[in-house]
Length: 379
Image (cartoon, rainbow, N blue to C red):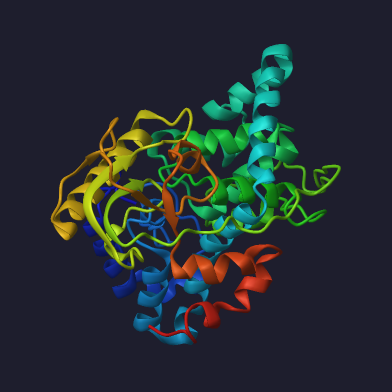
């Protein structure tokens, strides 16, 4: 991944094209291998663009099918759908996010009260645990704001089961530093590793697996490979996804946020955008580099929106919309949704309308309906 990546839609499209023209053909076989720092990743590295929807999941999945056909693109498309699934699952289980926030606060209180826990935590986030691999990934995360997906799984597992640290603190550490830090993907991935998302089935980092998929660079010999899953008294309640609104006809002000920065493809119906504002609600505690990426992505989206709709576009400061009705892309559970002002018409993409109701249980339900969501894999 370029360091730091250029956070514009044009840069994301260039990266997508380069991936599909070259390493994407080997994605299914190579994707689990973490080659380390300074080497081209075996994954697409599109996640910072997908997280902000500078690129949409739909266009990336369809581009994969056009490049490789249904069978050749199946693994890549399935991985793209994991992002859609996590958003839909958190939308149907918003209590997960509330529990994470409460658990993070409680764990931070423990750090203040328990010196031993605090020392372990500080060694973990500075890469000074002595665990081969883990320390390298901790430093890479802080310095590069990115980790290979397989390394994220190993890191989370070691954090939870070998270091015995609260998972919420690890999830918060990731969110502060990752350029692609997404409330749904991050929170639910940490819960999956802990054995909370798929109850009683934790992901345990294993020495031989790490050795194989880091090509022998790391060989940790002090992991707990037999730990029991974390538990919670009751699973989070399932709810129906909040309904979307129909955009009003006539002139509107369009409010953009960090969860959807592709205004050109929004389903606006009879609405006519005459003003665009940008609401940048970064993750709480996000590093300066993450905030800079957010700001750059928003600036790019506002520039494109102003040109596309031929209207003024800028930050959503007080009174920016005047008396116009405000339309905004539907913001899934997280900081953007929490920051949106009352009274907006929240419109939802058809992709999410089809996929989110299928994301209320395990991923297999949505995976089996991928051809349906994509219109029989239409490119």
